[in-house]
Structures are given as C-alpha cells and as structure tokens.
Length: 245
Image 1 (spheres, rainbow, N blue to C red):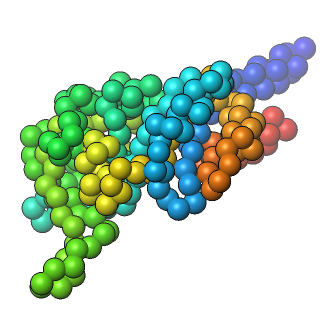
Image 2 (image 1 turned 180 degrees about the horizontal axis):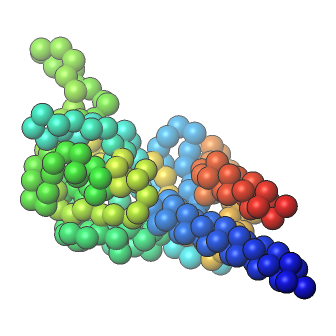
C-alpha cells in the first residue's frame, strides 16, 4: 500500500509540474504572439479595415489589430543590435496581446504617429545601454538611391518605454513602434503586414484558422500560434508523454 501511494504521489506531482510548466510557457509566448494572424503571400495587406469588417461577424474572434513587422538594426553610440521591429496601434494592441501590462517604464500611449517613439525589450535595452528618453538609430533593410549612391534608410527614435515579458526571445529581440512610423520606415505606404487575431479559445485556434482560410479568397494566409511555435509545444508534449510512462 505504501508503494502504491508513493507511485501515485510521484505520478500526480510530475504531471502537475509538467502541466504548470506548459501553462507558464504558453502564457509567456502568447503574451507577445497572437492566437492567429492573417497576412498575404505578398507580405503586405492593403486594406486591413475592410478585412476586419469582413471578419467582425465571426463570434470566435474576440479582438483584432493590424501590425507591421520587419527586421532592423538598432544602434546607440558604438553598440549595435539586430531586432524585430513591430509596428502597432497603441489603442488596439492591448486587445490582442499582454505586452501593455508588461511595460515597466513608460507607456504604450506615448507611441504617437510622427513622434518616432520606440519601446524596447528589457534585454535589448541593456544590450544597447539605452534608457527612457535616449535616442537610438534604427536602420531599415530598404535602401535609398541618391547622388552619392546606395544609402541605408536611417531614422532616429526616442525610447519611450521598456517592457519585460519574461521570455528572452522577446525581451532581447523585439521593439515596438507606432504602426504608421513603421510603415514609413519600411516603405509600406498605407499597407500593413497583417492582422492579428485574439480568439475565444486558444486550443481551437487550428480549427478556427482553417475555417477562416477556407472563407477568405485570394492570396490570404492564415496561421495560428500552434504552427508558429510548434517546436516548443511539441517538446513539452513529448516530455509529458515520457514522464507519464
């Protein structure tokens, strides 16, 4: 009886730890990532307002927000770091992600169009030696051809906040700017990269994404969080299975 009790205790403890680990990992990832995204194969979405009106009647979609995404290089003094620059609308970003609640210094409302403010991940700020109020240079992959030849596109941004979600991948490699400022930097004009969706049940994301993909015509592409971060959750699932056995 004592052996059976110890065995059952060990099983319950191990499964509880693994479930807690999976929940913590999922919450941290989804704090920055979206439940699903709608993009195009061309890499730019010309009419996100029209697309949102088309999807607003879907009761499984809780909230939507446009975004611009692009690789960039950030520099301050002699320090340089690559980063993923994400353009967001401050008033809508809190509806689809938890990053707003993880901003330790500053406020997302300080990202105003034309002011060129930027919010850095905590590890990225440490790497650059940047703090709130400092100016950093953002270098875009797009180039400008002038009389002197090919020149990279540069823009000075002012640090208006620092966030920390607890995942090194995001804290070290992501920076937030206003949607319109990012569109100008990456020469998207009035286009955006895509539309982020928050769903009523994250575990039904694959089924909802497939239904949306079948509904939308043209070159729309719908991806859910289980595909974007498949390696993380596949590893956790394998560990849970092995620990159970």
